[in-house]
Length: 67
Image (cartoon, rainbow, N blue to C red; front, side, top):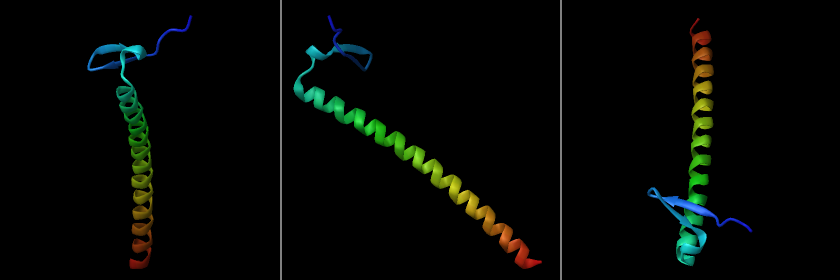
């Protein structure tokens, strides 16, 4: 026998059969948005590191030109 899927919202545990179809749709959206937020944070970190690397390279070039 398969165990019902469970979700915890505000410290309350719900089984799949306790949720309306509308609630299930909301849960799917929240999960999807959580994944997108995580991906956006990852991308932002990459962009910030890349920007830092280019600023460092720029400063190196400017220092060489000043010599």
